[in-house]
Length: 127
Image 1 (cartoon, helix red, strand yellow):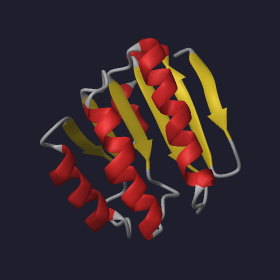
Image 2 (cartoon, one colour):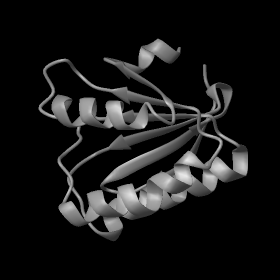
Image 3 (cartoon, one colour):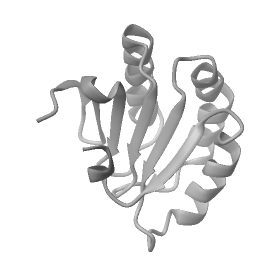
């Protein structure tokens, strides 16, 4: 059994540090915007720096399309920090029939210039 340290939990998002995998696990619960969207990323970034985490896992099962302002913040402010961080691999958990597949495929293409990017259907891949 993996030991998980709960890092952040709100009604919108759960962020967990999975020590044995040197990974941050990020799961959206429902739509949010503004600071409700940004705060989990900020917490995750602090944990990445603290533990030198190398893998970022995002569960998109309950994901959603972002507000334009949040997407702009993510690309202009957050991603440059991630590129300079210890993260080497980004994993998206996404079903083949997900309505977010086109968006995630676009992110995969853009992020592949900086990280190893993997799309999987379930978290069991890491067990």
